[in-house]
Image (cartoon, rainbow, N blue to C red):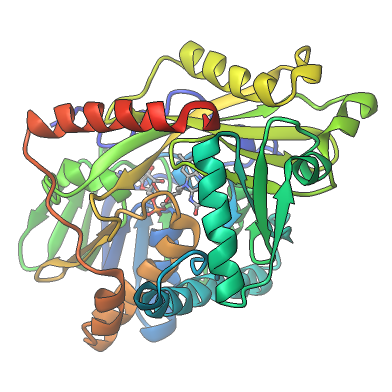
Length: 429
Ligand SMILES: Cc1cc2nc3c(=O)[nH]c(=O)nc-3n(C[C@H](O)[C@H](O)[C@H](O)COP(=O)(O)OP(=O)(O)OC[C@H]3O[C@@H](n4cnc5c(N)ncnc54)[C@H](O)[C@@H]3O)c2cc1C
């Protein structure tokens, strides 16, 4: 078992650094009793906390976060939120499932919007649409098939040739792309701070309080360095870090991925950044995500590392290369912030979710789209706990995550697959 239960975040989160400093809330101390204790204050944990409070208004709820708000992966991501767009290029049977998945996504997104409105905070949420861009012939094939799917399903879209991509993004790097109307961008650290700082009364949030151990008695006892928390129900909303507690070790992989934000650019440089607001996802899953931030900065996200973080200098070089290849005219522009974060992958993309034991629950494995998915999974987990509804519809649509091959085959398999996929991805990276 690793000595720290937390992901090895290493560098501070750039998004969080770009906001005004925030004093973290108190750490857990002494003996604390609550009906519900939630471990992890990411999107999943905070959605679960809010929903528990809505459904069980007299309950005492405790949330324990190992780091400070904004420094977990919920503050470290690229800030793409997509409530309804998994339709394109899918066959008819997949379309049925996509429709149902979209309903859950829409629910998660609406729950976030409601929290923003009630909490009265801003996270620079903007409906920008979403571009998927291709820099290789293989990627271009995928874009063409997405465009065909969109056409046949009557889904509003815009096919962009190389010139169209350049006018949208300012970059000549891409052969083509597709832009769909659905798609939002936001400042993820502002979102998670806003969610945490506007939690309803009755929810106590403790920061810098990593939970080190979990024991079963009449209820559950959680142990931090300075506190003992006794609760009737515990939710482990720690994403892949749930493996620390011995759960889903053969069902989840921790992936570290990296992001960087440029320094603020001079107006003459910022003229190369395309239309005012856009975000681009790559045609290949190992490719590079790019988005414009405000008037004068860009963000790039790329690179995947299996279970262990990479050296910060290596991440910086890789991301700088990604940025400069796309914007050779901006070779003098540097990345001001570079950081890594984690996401939890399952073999078939289905999350790990549900009851682990009497009074013990978990949710993990959002496979890189946890902003909306984590929100709906946390919300529905709370509903299952309070109402007893097993959430069969949700489980049927998301499916069950497969087991992953045991070690040493797992690590070997990951390295082989990722080497093959990297070759395929080529210039999409
Ligand atoms: C660079 C990057 C880019 C990404 N881009 C996107 C994107 O654009 N859109 C999108 O939807 N998703 C994106 N993701 C994925 C997204 O960030 C995750 O899916 C999401 O954060 C999952 O939310 P969560 O609440 O389940 O887990 P987390 O956000 O990981 O939250 C779990 C929390 O639990 C805490 N924790 C862990 N162990 C303990 C413990 N023992 N005690 C106490 N606390 C503990 C952690 O510190 C963490 O804050 C990206 C991820 C990364 C790293």
